[in-house]
Image (tube, rainbow, N blue to C red):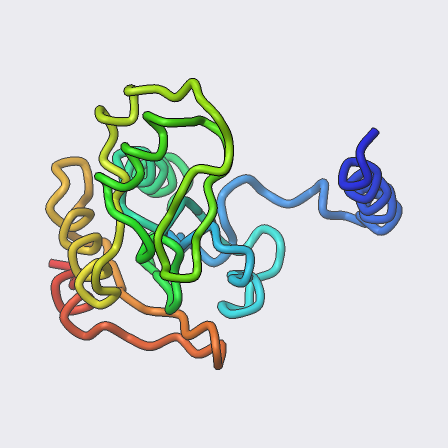
Length: 194
């Protein structure tokens, strides 16, 4: 077993020992809201949004983007599990700002191994091929401007035909240096409930 696997299983045993009555939590989130945010390990939505287990749905992906799958999850969260408010929360210093679709497609065409960033801030492959050209079929939803991406994602959610107009969608940026949530007013305005 790997060191990481051992650590995860040991942590789980300790968690089980202190699980208490969490097995009785209902499936619908108790506070009736959902957060769409980035998978970045520096973000802990439970801490920055004051969540306990069972409080809210947290949907995470690279960049916290409103992909088709993220919207699918939000719609299920509302339709079947009763969430009534949604947050889109991106963050400062996001890795999704460090490349674009063309760079990702080129890297994957050369090798499927992990790439590296050089001193000039350029990505390069450290592993050998083969790569794959399947990446050309994917929009990587990279980010050029955080405020703009939050606004775009809120608008994408708000205008999706399966999203009811009475759900407010708020737009924020998490500051990785301070832990503060900073509202993107244009996004929150675009996400107002009708």
